[in-house]
Image 1 (spheres, rainbow, N blue to C red):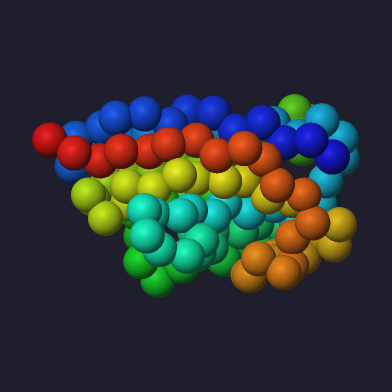
Image 2 (image 1 turned 180 degrees about the vertical axis):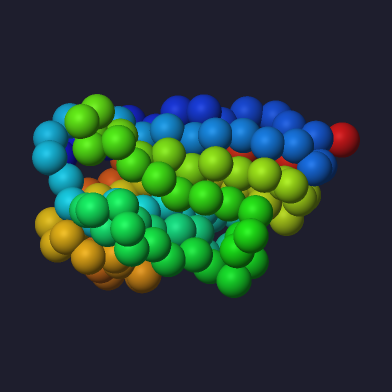
Length: 120
């Protein structure tokens, strides 16, 4: 499975961005992670195969929303009310199991990162 993330960019605090991740093959659980400068990579959100089950890090609950379109093999991360601390390289990941993964070890396939910068 190859993953292609897109949608990053520069946005002002309070603004919105939508990230997309297209998978080359069928995938099951998918997730978004991020890594800020000098920090470890952390999970942002995950979604199961059906799209019903989701997981969010506490830091993004109520602001970010993960969704997927299985017909397009694509997962999305809608990011609203962005804060400077959301600045990071965002990675999408996929796992072979159908349920939601909540940590790095749950995921097998990784895409390249897309940079999100929140700054005025």
